[in-house]
Image 1: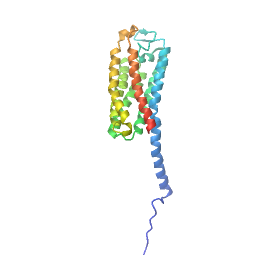
Image 2: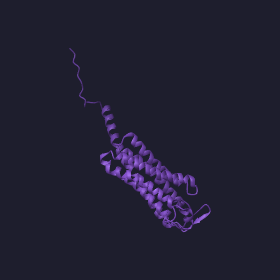
Image 3: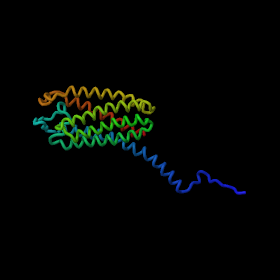
Image 4: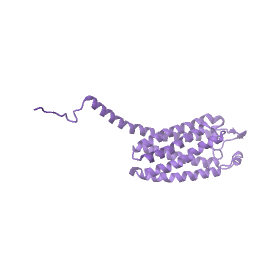
Length: 240
């Protein structure tokens, strides 16, 4: 009578053990990489904010459409004005780099938060990615290319508002993210309100005359938008 012996399950061949080890190592590496990618959503806004603060302080002014805007006033002039004149190359580079960092950060954020369902993940990621691309677009097409620049501004701000709202709704279903998700839901309509305020304060005749607060209202809106990106990236980095 022949007897059949079975190897124990843990008595695997070296090749099988290596395959299992590689898969486990890869599974562990993915969240680790994702959380560092999420940190890009913090680096981009910090660098961008420092850029317009410093360049706004040293800018002598700029010319657009045959009109000279000088001296430069952060209260009156929009940030996009720094994309023209002597500060142009630096401010435009800051726009593009901020958009790239935010795009990488968005990828890291949604790879880090694994509890979100597929539809919610893709909708939130797509809207926030559009916002990042819009910001980068503002550096490629300057204020003189007004229509394309305006599209970039629209994508950057409206995409962020909708993305915050959609992402907040998804995060409210995740226990460890519920409180921040509620704040992010509120950030959506708040961003839209600041967009309306910024557009209401934008008066080209007043800007030419060196009057108004168009620059101030725009900066308040921009700071609010990049703050939520940075907060989302930082929490994804810490909680992953």
